[in-house]
Image (tube, rainbow, N blue to C red; front, side, top):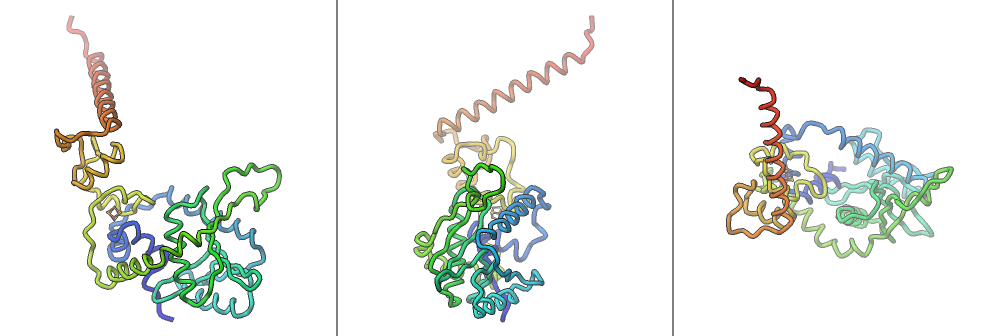
Length: 294
Ligand code: SF4
């Protein structure tokens, strides 16, 4: 089996920003230094995934022995399905050069159900993008799915005594929300594969997408020439979007005739006040250190 061109994670990078995918693939030396917080979030997510397996116990793990050889995992998944295994963890599929795994795959009354576990307390928009790709790859690989759901943490659960796994998680079918996205998935895959094969850096301006849905790990590189003082990033969303679009990055560059949202004006006034207060304080400190000449 040939190695994949895109995985679920690189597809998701490309959905956030095509330049991020390009940099990840071809200029990884420009990545921000490793962030311990991000690693901690990632580790917590992995732990949640492991606990959620108890919802469907006694499954077989299809993860590859060599973590870089996912094709081994695809073959193992096919074998497990053929051998009548009814619960598979990390089931892996590949279709048309796109690889993805699903946390838990379960066969009930002859029908397959897919579950993707998230460490959040609700279903978020990017979970839908993610599940739409999984559904596309799994079903086009030849496995019919009866349903696909997101399993997430139930924030109403209060532990009393032993951990109740059924109460700890909520499960929500997203089938209706992802089937309507299948055409968009095909288009996106085509666009992202083109970036990888042509190796041409997309021209993308910085913007709100740099931290939505995740903080981009190439932000130091892309934002290096953007002023951080008096930044328009501090303003109300509507203004922020407008200014970033126009490549206006600091308060000083805001055109005089632009009508700011009231919330942004307040923010700027507040910051100016703070500056004055700080300056007064600093002047006071400075004067107190000067010995009186008389
Ligand atoms: S910092 Fe922003 S523009 Fe640069 S790669 Fe990341 S998301 Fe794209």
